[in-house]
Each structure stands twice: as C-alpha cells, then as structure tokens.
Amino acid sequence: MAAPGNCNTGTWEHFPHGADVGVRGYGESVEEAFARAALALTAVITDPAGVEQRDRVPIRCEAPDTELLLVDWLNALVYEMATRRMVFGRFDVRIRNGRLDATACGERLDPGRHQPAVEVKGATYTALGVARRPDGTWVAQCVVDV
Image (cartoon, rainbow, N blue to C red; front, side, top):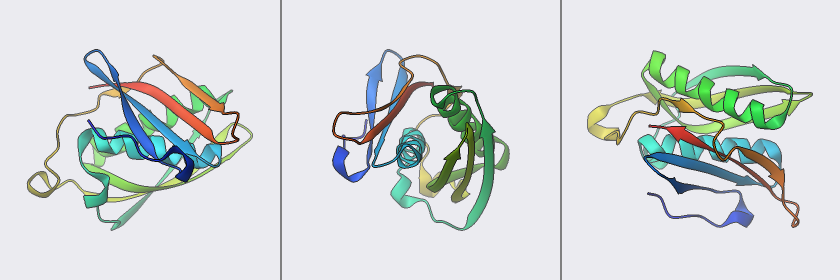
C-alpha cells in the first residue's frame, strides 16, 4: 500500500477497505483531484513513476454530478487499461457542466518492467465522495474492486 503524500501539493493515497482498495486524490481543483485519483488507481497496479508517457488516449465521460462522474472516469480508465493492455502515469483532466474530457498518457503494459500487483475490476460507489475541503482543496475518492 502506498504511503500518503502531501495533500496540499495535489497528491493521492490508498485507504483500507476490506479486500478492496480505496483510492483518493487531492488537488487544488476538482480536475487535479480527479487526475490524482487516477494516479492512485494506477498505483494499485504498478508504480506510476515507472510508466512512460508514450501514447495518449482521449477519454470522455458525462454524468449528472461529480461523484458519478468520478466513478465513470475511473471505470473508463479501467476499460482502456484492459482493452488496450496499457498503464497510465499522467492525466490531463478538464471538467465542465457535468462533462469530463481527458487525456490519459501511458504505455503498453510490460509485465517484466511494470510488475503488475493486481487487476482492477472497476470503481464502485463505496466510500464515494468528491468535495471541497475547508482549506479550499479538493478530494475525490472511492473504492475499487480488485
């Protein structure tokens, strides 16, 4: 399990949840928190720092609120990782009027180099939350099924 980072610099962390894994992203904006939650998702599988930014994959989602948008976003990433056999290490996220437009940057999964720990099956509604904290930073979190 990854150690938590400094929440004030836009980081991510895992939190315990039974047999599954909670992913949490922090940021100065909701977009940054979503990008950091995606990094936490990658970190369930492999170290995001070891992922080269060779290929760019556009991702679009739409949902009636930011919490549902987070689940759709993370599930879109799970789908892209599974169907393209890729891992991602950088995310450029834009959110406007319930629509997310993003680019996931990464490379084809190399089992020898990336040493995948587990396969993420999908994001769930468990412990789901997207909120602005009193200090003005954002947190985006949910549990992913592994």
